[in-house]
Length: 352
Image (cartoon, rainbow, N blue to C red; front, side):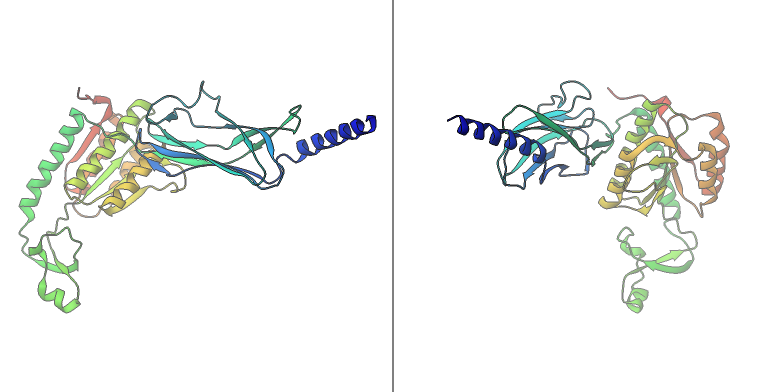
């Protein structure tokens, strides 16, 4: 009997040592989300996958997931973390060769770039006497688009721009000299199509006139101050402007001196166009903006002016319109041949 008890004690001691040493072997824990770009407050799936690839069970496993600040359960709106920086804890048992997937519906309320940065694992031995810790690095990214801005200041800016565009279109709708042809994009009226030239080229083309005015627009997002609140208002205004242009079927390009971080690369502009894909590219860029500028505001606006060719409508969004921007704005008006419509976030009046 004594020998049996001694042998059992030795077996349990070795089993405890072995289980503690190999508890993390072939154990896979992964955090991921079902989407990368979401709307503010929009629910998305946050998934934790745990897979034990060995025959030995994991009797105790505590997972502390690192979550972004502000993450809430949807639709309740309660915070995922009990206190900031504490993470989210899950405790469970995993049998041999068992896989478990936990799916949570969550949301993020504010614009920005957020990360789920892996997890910290704490596992116990077979006897429940000791535990060991391991950290698993990961990086799941979620980008939240800016909200739409409803404001009197922005409404007045857009109203002035759309009013001038309507006048200019009526002035230039009957040009007198055809200088060439270009491909039909679907935005031009049917009367602009040259049916004879289309038959010759075997695809639709439209006339290009000496006084051609595409009436497309350039949206300029200029970081002119380090005021974070005004910067966020500009992000919201930029979304409202681009969506309004889409509704009006006005082609536009987007240029900025802001730093745009992440997998999209630090791009400076989105080319001329319109459509859902075009808009989503701009909105994702707005979500990835850091609030920092790549170049001085005045220098950047002068550079934009030098790159303009022909008549073009301009919409400028700035956190604050300072005196140092007066020179660049005059230069932009001269180069574009039209008024520059400015949204100044420091003059913002939000509608009730």
